[in-house]
Length: 96
Image (cartoon, rainbow, N blue to C red):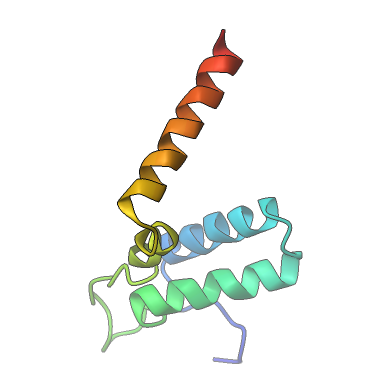
């Protein structure tokens, strides 16, 4: 299989990569870079292509999904509470 060939990936992996790439592009990442990051994420979660014989059926680790929320983890409880109150006030003002 030539480098860059995605034929050994399952349909689910292809959909997942497309969805992740769309998210990166919405954040302003250029198209090729977004696609590269998306496939890196899919590979990290699933260990690579799952369509071949020997590695087929391995469960996804969801490793990349568990990295979310690390920014808030470093803040104190008071800082997180203050941010929540500020967000609530902003939403309340915009709604009314």
